Each structure stands twice: as structure tokens, then as C-alpha cells.
Image 1 (cartoon, helix red, strand yellow):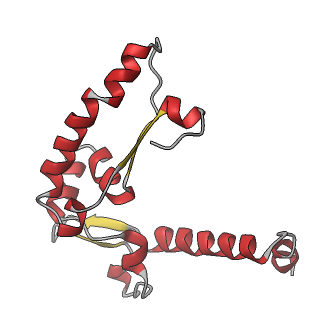
Image 2 (image 1 turned 45 degrees about the horizontal axis):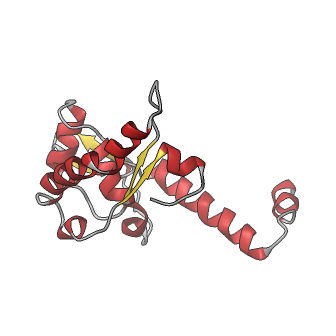
Length: 151
């Protein structure tokens, strides 16, 4: 009964449904998160060895599967998780603050690093599922996020 009472405190039905969607996605991520099986070197949901089946919308939540080689490279520390994460979320969020914030540094972030990042993402994406290569990536910098702008 306490959960029902708490759910009634949301001011709108939309907020209540949004909360429930977030809860359900979180539950799927906890119970069926992808893990690397070291015997077969394949990535599978953590629930697979127990014989549990994944929800029917599992692919919608997790996105297109990454090649097993990407997981292997990340587990060995050769590939940072940043690049596959950017491809999965479609957002490159630069949260790190510099020691000294200058206009020159911001210009480098906006111009020169965009080409380097695009090249790195392109090299990884061409070896992955075709949907990764065709997507548009939004870039956000720490100073744009503060001002509420979108990159």
C-alpha cells in the first residue's frame, strides 16, 4: 500500500508514467545487463546462464549490439568505453573542466577537437553495425551545458 500511496503523489499522469518507464528500464539494466562470458568470449545478458529470458523490448533499451571484439578490447583496457558510449547515446558530453577556462580553449573544443573525435568515432563505427555509422552525434561542452544551450 505505501507504494500505491507514493505513486499518487505525482501531479500528473504523464509524470507517473515517465517514472514507471524509468523504473522498468532500470530494472531491465540491472537484471539483464550485458557481460562478457570468458569461456565463450561472447557478450550476453547476465541472466542468460540462469535461463531467464529477456524482455521483448530488450533491443530497444540496449540498442544495436556491439561486436564482441569491442567488449574484449574494453575489458583489456585497449579501448576506452567513451567511444562506444558516445555511439550508443549519440551525445558526446565533455564534462571535464579545465584548470584555466579561456576563449582559446573553448575554440579548440569547438573546432579542432570535433574533427579528431569524428575521425575516432568513424574508425570505430565502420567496424560495427551499419546503424552506428549513419547516426548524428551531438556534442556538448561544459560551458554550453551551464548556459542551457544545446551543442
